[in-house]
Image (cartoon, rainbow, N blue to C red; front, side, top):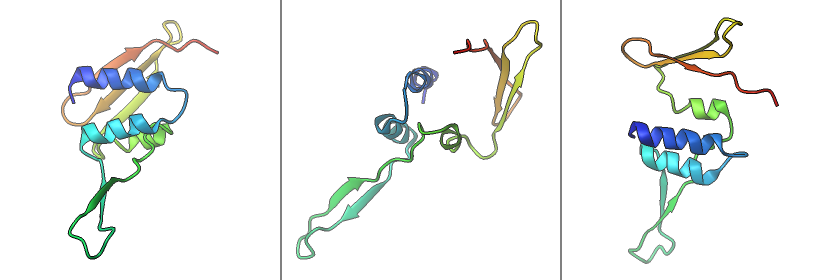
Length: 108
């Protein structure tokens, strides 16, 4: 996936009000994780039917989404000094750490 596709996906997920199976399907399709079942409805026929298996619920929770992060990845989110507010986030798979900053979300 390109950086633009990842940003578009992040924006789409952030806009969700809850779990969304169509977004889960999109994630599996683009990451090559889609699973299919093959069935032969008529044992006397040579035809096969292919069905997509219900995708994993990546948009249902942060824990589900984190299953997409490679096992060797390192995640860290820390709060910055209280004067500036906000958070530092880092995801390292291989290579140097790449820290990013995000503003503190407004309170509801």
